[in-house]
Image (cartoon, rainbow over all chains, first blue to last red; front, side, top):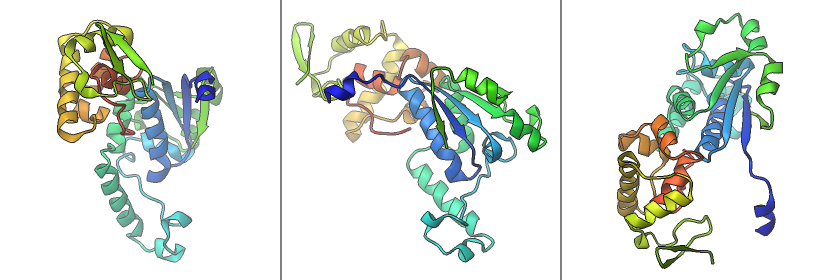
Length: 160
Length: 105
């Protein structure tokens, strides 16, 4: 206990969200929001398929990955059947709601209102041929990896 | 066991530094904890949050999550973070004499 007390508390976190599935996006959102709740500075950096979570027309429709996910405990061929991912997504969204965890759009708004910063990765934005207007206005900026490191000064960087 | 000396009383604290016995809490104690926690002087809006949290705790045995405070008390996220800077969930619970919220949200 005394050892734990002498450790320096976490003051800033920079969380990278690199995946676009529902289960790939939520952990980063929960960690960023949780950091703000504890008075820890937080920024979110969405890269590669993680960009779906801040892309206006996609962020309300993120899906659970039912293929290539052994923890789903269903055979891969079953996971590939049309409609299975939609069903699993529906079930997971219900569970998420039961825990009073907000939907993605509301969660981004909460993190934003709580003082968390939200960034998109420039290389991925260019790769997917996206424009600033394709994103929710909650996005603070589209930044390069260099700017990301600059903004992460003194922060713990967490990759999800 | 950690204790807190307030207004001539010795209050026992739990492992998180919150009041161990929420029944010992009074509004005067809240004002004093608030100053010590850096929240400062309590405004009418602070009291809306504190009273909402007390009400939920008395009914359900657990303090409400931040999301629930912002959904039901009438104080939104932005304002809540202004009222209780540096960790609104814990700060508000501490001032309200309640245990640390168990929710991750």
